Amino acid sequence: MVTAADPGETRTSVWLAARPAAPARRRSEAPSGLDRDRITAATVRLLDADGLARFSMRRLAAGLGVTAMSLYWYVDTKQDLLELALDRALGEVRLPAAAAEGAAEGGGAGWPGRLQTLARSYRRVLADHPWVAPLTAAYPNIGPHARAFDAALQRLLDATGLVDAARTGAHLAVSQFLHGCGGTVRRAPEGDFCLALDVLIAGIEAKAPAGRASTAQAPAGQGTGRAGVDRSGTGRPTTGRAGVHRSRTGRAGAG
Image 1 (cartoon, rainbow, N blue to C red):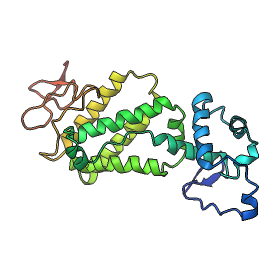
Image 2 (cartoon, rainbow, N blue to C red; image 1 turned 180 degrees about the vertical axis):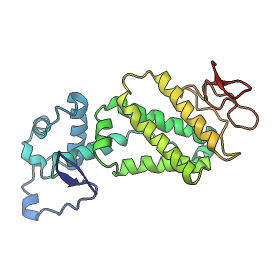
Image 3 (tube, helix red, strand yellow; image 1 turned 180 degrees about the horizontal axis):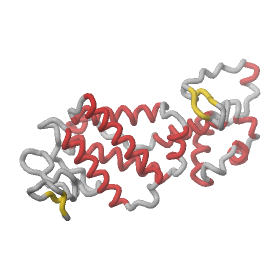
Image 4 (cartoon, helix red, strand yellow; image 1 turned 135 degrees about the vertical axis):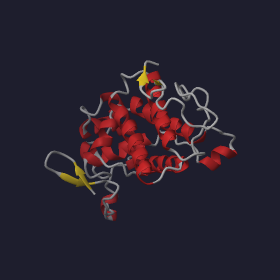
């Protein structure tokens, strides 16, 4: 897999590139006290402090007290380092427990509550690290933490019971919602984000097979629950759209 490094250039993702081991003599010449993990952690701190536009290998090296060339013992390019930093930040996302684990721990939120946990935690990472959103668009998300995030989302979609086109549509809707909120994360109030998330979940529940839509509320302190969505004993939405009242004619009216 290749990605855009600079206009007109392509590169292989750091997660796919095979990095040959340096000869023993050269390894002994590498600067002491450095390793890839320490450099990646320093990269995250520098990106948080100065932003993506001001990031450079020289500034990173100065913060570590080494020369810029010393860093290239551990990474081949600046883009490789940005990919490593991106996945490290994604490791901060709180992944919801699998359904069986949640039941064992007494959690009863069902997949809607677990999806709220995942979405709210992802949004928090975007707020804490504003450089993550543009990097997710620039590089493939195939590091170990990114794959764990996607696996958690796939498990949640499994729990909905959706299949084929409906499953694909739900995955696309959630993915676009989560990645799209990166551009507005510092402007949109938390309540607006939670309301939009409730509407998204209500739409997925409306498409879910009978008996698979959960009526459980999200855990305490996790937003509005099913804000604006009243539910009958069937477990299906009674409004069709959160916060939208429908008259007997089926036309949307002022709620």
